Length: 231
Image (tube, rainbow, N blue to C red):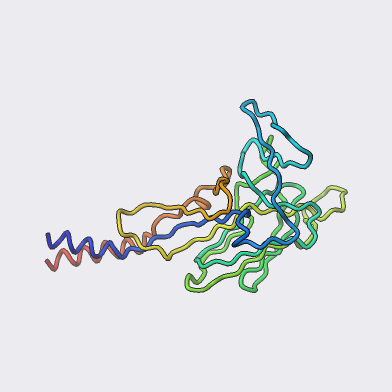
């Protein structure tokens, strides 16, 4: 009985990491400038666009998002997000007319080329994050800004437009979770809409819930062994 109590007490304090997705529709957390919700084309069972209107974005067949902020010829378009976490990911639709972005995280700017050649038979690509950064201070509030810099240097077409700003979601990793039951993965969604939080076309190792910090689990197991030897 004493062994059981010791184990329970030690496991109670094990920390978990989880990814929290904030969709672009959550304007209570994301500030959009010169960008707004775009209409995503809906498909029937035969793959035919249903009730299409001019300007809808056909993300089939991947169906990687139900909601996206877009702006054509995206001059001065941006999205700002504040969070507390140890990592941040930006998910975006990308294709041959995506612009070059500037990502500013806590005052440090990085240029990111949004240009991408989509998979075969798919208008857009969203299989990988546009930007990611880990190793952040979990005790500090971070501010990240995604802004259009200009036309992608990778484009070879003759058009002179800047390109199309895009944002699906911000995803940040939170370590401020304490496990009080059995170890498990967890994903939390924060959104003002009921749209899918995790793009179906994205890598599960990036956008799905991150596993428990195994370093901390190992430390806890060592403590269990020491506790048992002392009983």
